[in-house]
Length: 162
Image (cartoon, rainbow, N blue to C red; front, top):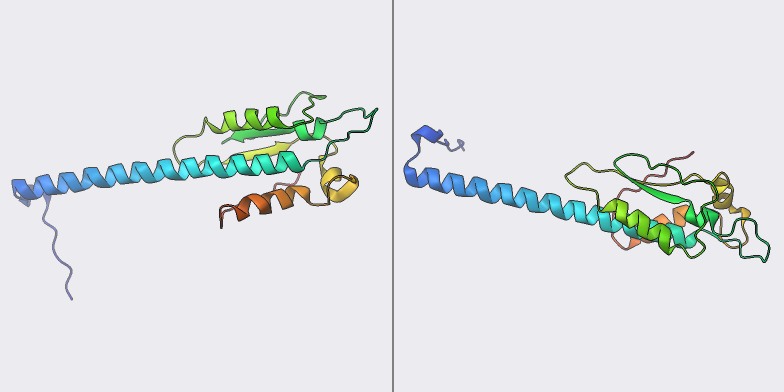
C-alpha cells in the first residue's frame, strides 16, 4: 500500500494550514505535559526512596553513644549533580530534617533527563549496610530501594558503590 503524500506547507489550503498548526500546538502541549508528569514522578519516587533509606538507617541509641543519628543524618540529595557531603558530626536521630532537606533539593528538578543522587558519606555507612549493626539487617539500603520500587512498579534504581 503506497504511503499517502503529505502536502508541503505552501501547498496547503488555509483550512489545512490551520488544522496542521492546531495539531502541532496540541502535540507541543502534550509533550510538555508528559515531561512535567515524568518529572513529577521522578520527584515522588526519589522522595519515597529517600524516606525509606533514611528511616531504615540504624541509629545507635545507647546511653553514651558517641554519634547518635550521624548515619541517618548523613544522607544527602543532589539534583543532577552529586551532592556535597554534610559537615562531619551532623546528626538527625529522627530523620525528618534529613528527609525535608532532600525533598527541598528535589524541588529544583525541571526539564528532562534528570538524575537524582542519594548518597551518604559517613565513613562507616558501608559497614552498617554490610550488617555491622544489630538494629538493621545487612543490605538495608537495597531493601529500602526494593520497598520504594514496589510502590511504583518498574523503575531504575542504581546503587553506586563508594
